[in-house]
Length: 266
Image (cartoon, rainbow, N blue to C red; front, side, top):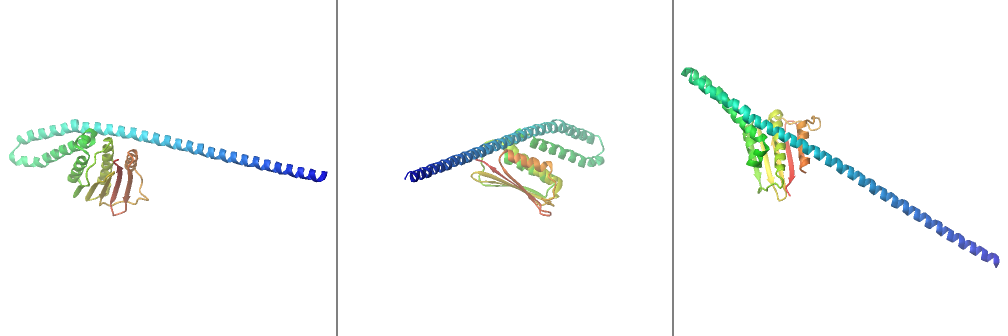
């Protein structure tokens, strides 16, 4: 009986010991899991903070670059309007005086030169307006685009048209008007320089929450996979990121280039 009691006591002790060891193991495992979860959360939080800091830093750099570029463009606009414009006006005036001092049969030879100077003066004044953000804001976003297309229409294209769809919605941040206009201006500049296009179309489509802008030319296009990503494309994309707009550029050889910009108005 005594031995039987000792065996039972031993069995109970072993059972309690086993339960204790299992409980300790479970607690240790739980602590390890909790520690691991906390570690992952802190790691993810640090990564998220680092990404946010990097994004904030890049946004600040892009904003500073944009402000610097805008000030530079404004200064160039002033120089064109005040200095180059005055020189052209003076040249036109001197040419008119000179024309009055020559024989009638020679005056006709001045016509082309006079017309060229007058056209250059008009072009300089129109260009100076598009480079000054205050002028762009004053005359309005759509009117600025229309003026730019009209200017290019005289210089380069068979047709350059603006189409507006939907009811216009005002921008909450008017600085974004300037940024979007500069994106379009960069696209138009590249079209003039590289596309060999004859026709250009810009569509502004207003919806309840978004403004979708589509600009398309019918030029030679290019291969998106092999084309070198120049500063123009980088500037357009960084400006779009700065205002939270979705940006895409599509092109194929002999099928022109299409810019699509989706800007959230609300």
